[in-house]
Length: 329
Image (cartoon, rainbow, N blue to C red; front, side):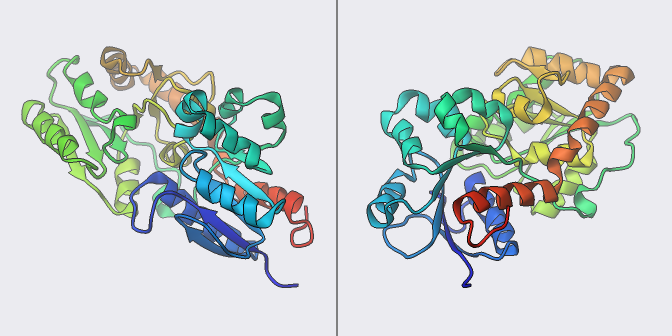
């Protein structure tokens, strides 16, 4: 039997730094490992694939409509992004209607199910993004507290990430020299770059290092005492899964995308856009060894979610429902 043909549609074009592009590339590698032929497109108007996987309910809607017009009831999987879940489907009728075009839905963490109707939840698969084994993401040796305590931030500088909240939090902390906040990620607009450079001038404990290759970003993660993710919204950030896999404690904004990955009882959430609350968590992380140990212990219970085999089997199960002639359940 010929290999099944799958097209992944993402609004992020080739070369894009967007997370949706990285997700599409990851899934393409995984699906090829399951025996499929996979193409990635930033639009779709024609083709004879067996299945479409679309990322982004609003931006991929034209491709989804074209698929339904051309291929009727051939299976279509819609993977819901953070923007879909926590903005677009709440305010945009067309984005909401895109969910009705899908044969199945995919979300990246279980809290996302709360945004869906019962009928939509029945069609939805929760597929956690895994972390490939290797030196860069192995559980690190214990990082000893020393005179320098490093927090890292990994992610491109854009509004949804609230990227400078940690730099602002530093200004709520005493002027001890041993704290360091290192931020890695491309500035996607000129004003973001200008603000990063301004903050470095006024806050010597903050350092923006720009975009790094993935292996260097992982080295920064493993060499840090903790990671900060201050996003306003997330569908389920892969960098959080990487921190869990590496055993690096996370200080996270209290949003569903973070809570769905770290767990509802994780002890280090802070309200969105609240630098004072973040500063207090930073202080506890530095000064209270029992708090730091509690964060590390909480991550250990979540680490199985990052197992690549779990993600592989989740996709195999979904594909077995939609293309049973090609995939065994």
